[in-house]
Image 1 (cartoon, rainbow, N blue to C red):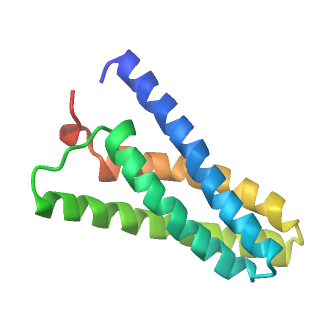
Image 2: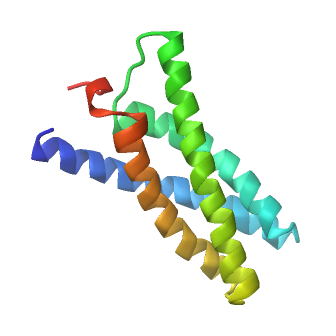
Length: 136
């Protein structure tokens, strides 16, 4: 991948990552504002933000075009499984920061989400939307 394409990819991932994180954070904040337990709130925020992230990463960041339903299904399964992995990181990170360290719920969510975005990029680039599947 050329340097220009790499910079473009990271830029787009950052932009859509910010939007994904904002969606996640806004949904989470609204739900905890409504006195919904932070574990349930983060689960709902996760679902909403993963749907957004899949379509933006697939179509705009990594420009992947599956050639068959089977290929698209596998890609979707890989995306979902990697996001479930980072969801558990999100939940356990929040539990650690909120319940053990007594950090504020909103600050905790921000800290954990920075790490989640980085992990998600690495998984998307090298596992889900591999180089040989991307358009030139």
